[in-house]
Image (tube, rainbow, N blue to C red):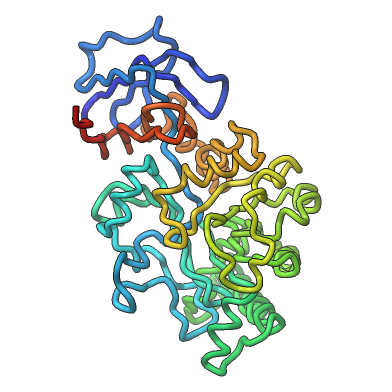
Length: 396
C-alpha cells in the first residue's frame, strides 16, 4: 500500500480548527500525520505526493442511510433486492447478501468523495432486516464491511400500510404495524432470556434456534440501535414509545416532520438522519418536507446527519444536499459535519471515520475549492489509504 502525502491544502478536519495551509499523510490505510505546512514531512518519504494548490481537504463523506447496491441502476425487478415483502417481520435478512458492490453507483459515490455508507433494507416491512456500514471501494462486499450488523431497520407509516394493503394482508393500519413490532420484540425477549438462562445453567436446554429472534438479540442488549423509518410526527412518537417499552436505542430516519418537534427530540437526545429533501412530496406523509429541516433541528440541539436515501436522491449529490441545508439556514460547519463527523458518531464509528485525525482510517477527499462553491469539484478521493478516484485533467 502506497504512502500518500497531500500538501498545500486547506484542511477541514471536522474536529478542531481548520488549517489554512497544511498537509495530511497516510500509510497502511491510516492517517499518519496532519498539520501546518511548516511541519510537512519530506516528500521523498512518500510514494505519492499531491499538491492541493490551495484546494480543500475534508474527511471522506458519509451517508448514514442509503440503499446503495440494492436497487441497481436501470433495472426493475431483476435489480431490486431491498424489500423481502413476503413477511412483515424479517429481522434476519442481512443486507450484505443483497448488495451488488460493482453497481455503477459505487463508482459515482467515490467520484463525489463519498467513502462510506450505511446500507439499509427498504421500508416495506415493520421490521426489515440488518443494516451494514460499508466502504464504497471494493468488489467483494465481505472486504468492504466496516460494521455488520450496524442496526436493525424498522418502518412505520405509509410504506408498510401500502405494501400490505395491496396484498390484503396485515398490516394495513398503523396499529397493526406497531403490534407486529411489539409482538416480534416480545418473542425475541423471551427467546433471549431462554438462551441466557441456558448459557448460565448447563442443566437448562437451549431453545430451538429461531433465526428471526436471534437477529434481534443485539438490538435488545443495546449493542446496536433501531433505525426507525418515520416521516409524520405521530409515527416518530410511536417509534420512540416502542423503543422505550423495550429499552432500545432509537435513531429516526427521514423525520420529514421532525423539525416541528425539534425541542422534544433535543430533550430526549434522539438523533435524526434527515432527508431526502431534494425530492418531491410523493405521498401524503411528506407534506411537511422542507430543506430547512436540518437547520431547525440543528439549532434546537438535535444531532443531525444529512442523508440522500439513495437512490431516492443519488448518493453522488450528498455534498449538494449539505450545501442546500446551509443555504437554508444551517450553520456551514454544521452542514459539513452532517455528512462527515455526525453520521460517524450516530453510527458509533467516530473512532475510525468522519474526521481527519492521526490513527483514523485514511478516508479523505480533495476539492478544487470550497466544497459548497457551485463549480467546486472533487479532484482526488482516498479510501482506506488508496486513491480510488482522480479527476481527469480539464482540456485546455
